Length: 154
Length: 154
Length: 154
Length: 154
Figure 1 (tube, rainbow over the protein chains, first blue to last red):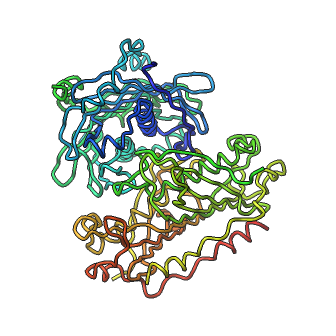
Figure 2 (tube, rainbow over the protein chains, first blue to last red):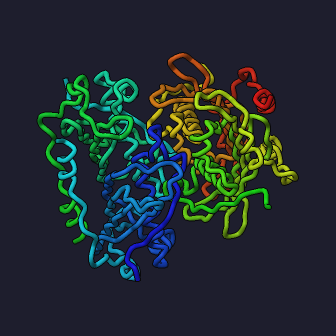
Figure 3 (cartoon, chains in turn yellow, red, green, blue):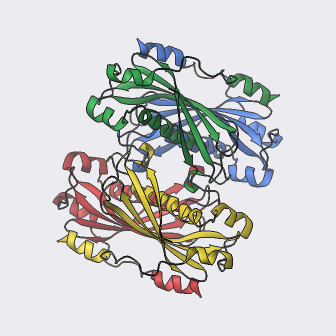
């Protein structure tokens, strides 16, 4: 079984800004869509996890690198992996690909803490652990921010 | 003159999600508000920079750490600094503080590349450089992600 | 050929508010998705209409009635019709149906004016008229707002 | 005491779309801001109404007419009135004015039903009634949709 999940979505007019690009904060909504579909692909309905197991996946950190702009009406492929799984945390990584030509438009990560309804960290219930197994051979690391910043700052 | 800018905003119902917290992607909109007010405080209208000087501040990277949730109707103080200024890039850093008690709810950064209308990187026009001078003594660094992740993963 | 278009979408976490429902303003984004898919079903790419024919479909009025709340992760069917076509205006009507049981959650309308790039009203180009033909036998009218308001105000 | 409330807000980049205007659905967020400030002006914190009095102001209908576009960085005045108050419903009306020149950019209405936590309609608690008294002499009615549509459809 493949260890990432892909989901397709189309850029909405509401998601663009006056530059004609997807507003930078909206990529995080796309990551959420990817994350939810990753779980659904494995038979986990996140809303049941919240309701039946008092387990909320609370975001602790998020980051995104924007490589090429996504535009209105673009069909996007959101590729989601579990990059790291600990007792009480999950790290997801994402790629946003333009479906028309496979071009990578953005990459990102989110770190999540499993919490109960009151926001206290807890261990991920055992029954879910199998679903979130991290990919054994992660894709080659993208160049670090300092490298990119350095190139741009020349 | 103080080298950061503060701006206040109130959390909208539209910005919360069903956990009752501000949706994680909406902090990036708050950062944008902070960034624009930072410029306005220094007499720079970003829309004129786009229109009159063909200089667009295109986001290349963004990141946020969520420490405590912001809730509906909270009054938030967005504190914005220029963390680094290069020939063609600017790095902003942000703090989101709860006005009622000064609690720090989130921190974040964005890296921007100056581009022309066609999206080609260019140097920031000289007349704007003075406005974006980086703060000489940045606040003590917040603990790195791995530290936080380690603590949570115990 | 059927004279409405259906499109499916799933409610995102970002679209809910702290009541656990879809935020009322987000239905208008769903209407936009329905409208765009209505056009795509007929071979009209709205972005080409903007780019190649200098014809923008500018919204002049919008309205929505909320009957039952849509919730996170609900699969929704957006049913879109052209309710009225004039020389320079198009009126779309929408139904939002819960896919699981066919329940009608909301209905709405938008009135649009065809404009050029400068925002001046113009006639819809002839080549597009056939695509927007209004449905001959519209569905029975939903009870007027005053009726509903009256019932609730008893 | 004046019987409307005014609140100022500035258009965010996130709220524009690729036409360079405020996205049509975002006016409903502005209406929400106006509504909340209307209540705050009268000493009603909506979050306490939800929490302490189990009274949720659930939206049943919403509508907006767009007259002139609002643009990025525009300072907007949201003028909010109670147009009608019944036992279990409240109708708010809104004007969106451009602060620079007082131009009216949009008008709208929302109809709300008072509900308890389970979504069952209930009477507005007595203690709140005084705060929502409808304005005695409403502003002259704006021309009806059919009039506007007729003019545009010539």
